[in-house]
Length: 384
Image 1 (tube, rainbow, N blue to C red):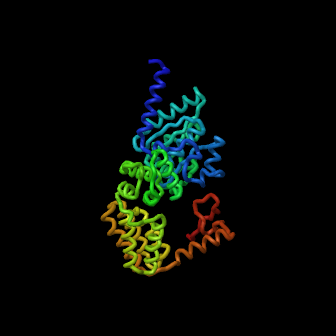
Image 2 (cartoon, helix red, strand yellow):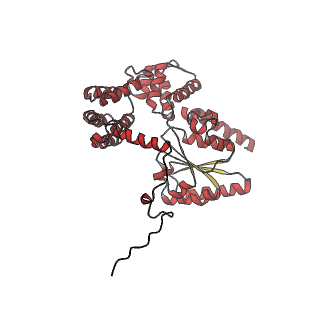
Image 3 (tube, one colour):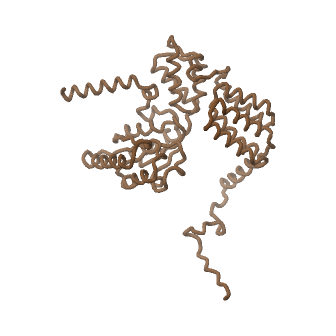
């Protein structure tokens, strides 16, 4: 087979795979303007956009919730900057794999003058030795490292590698942007979708674009006449909408919070049940309870925060339906607890003082004794 025919065959195979790929993969952006969300980084004056467009991007670590575009951004960066894109999985790659990638990058730069982006997904899973093996190449500029993690890099990425990278925080995709992405999916699949079905998927996605597109794809498969209705969205999500409209989600959350604030335990439990049965993400509910424990209860009942955090951990370990007991436990505790806004008032006052021009210099008596700017105090002499 000639080289030309081989290229045609390879392209045909790629096209076929692309047609069979999941909807989320087929809709993956190819330009910066195609990326949904993350305007604080990729907007017209966003710092990441400016670094990419001027081809001055150095190593970065992208961290944020699942489905916020970490992999997508890395692939678009490679396309826009015309750099070689090499992917490493922190789950399956070892030090040997890292060294092979770095050797290939060195050869590519010397022979073809082409730079390399090394994308490490779930970089927090790399152990210290694996992270250290990247350091010389990052420091020398041999590669541009793009690490992706759902964990806080201040705790999960070692200090030397972190100090040589720019940390960029990605935010959950807004409901409006998720809706825009779903409309793209509907158009790509050649179907129509009812508004209530679309917004049910939006609300259940939790800001995760990939999850939203996966749910849409299942809903489309469940429909029979190229029209996605509420019943299909409910089937895809394995949940009932319970007349959750576009804004009902936020109204029910508000009702839960205000009921606990008023110590109305019965009403709070009712709205909790409404959220659970409507298919709200239990992790979202748990997060709201954790915030409430400090924001509305605070030091009036210090055990409330412990209870809320324990409920959140139980949700992760147990899952629904049993985790509803843990959530109910926390809601009942928070409803019965005495309420105090002292925590909110205290941190607000401190922030106002900081932004109002208070001195940020650390007083001498509060400084770290090991700090290089600490004055040397002569040893005390004791009488013999």
